[in-house]
Image (cartoon, rainbow over all chains, first blue to last red; front, side, top):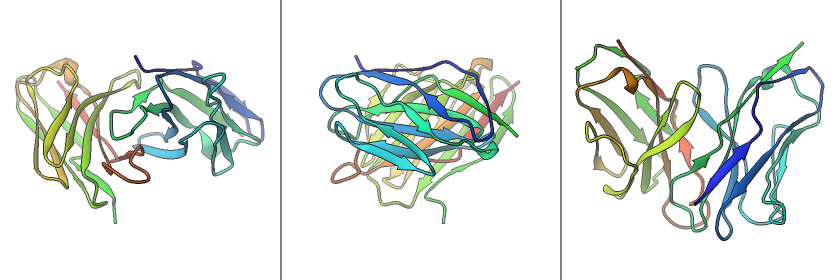
Length: 113
Length: 115
């Protein structure tokens, strides 16, 4: 079946530190991959996505590259800010789309000034 | 304009009551979803509708009954609420075809607390 495994948190960093949140997946074919972010007390927002191998999704300084050979979609940011404190979810949509998203368990990031 | 909206945002109720959560999207999407987020933040699909037709039902107790009066709305009715139903419920939508059909857009969530 389809599954997503992401690094367990919580992750605590100082402002301007480098961020990596690991995400690996199991799926048949070529799923689409996503990172969603949930700020405290808010809903889910799409952060970035990649729909085919070697695609790089990017938004707000965050990046993730779809690596088929390692079935990974790690999230990175070169310099985090306090405002990046949130829970980050890696997710996949099976090949073909329009089906349920399968989520990782989420990684809570806290950035201290 | 809010793309996917849910009402209410907060819902506090007693065990045994019946309650409904409403969801509306103005994105013109054909497919809508309900997800449940538990106390550990884990998100799991509950239902999916395409053009008012149920296409996914993920082993959810039959106390939960989704209703889609039209493709822009997907409501969730819960009978005989239990303590374990306390969670955040998210509505989402996506197009059913074309570019971007794999991307789902989420509402702000409804925080349900059953006492």
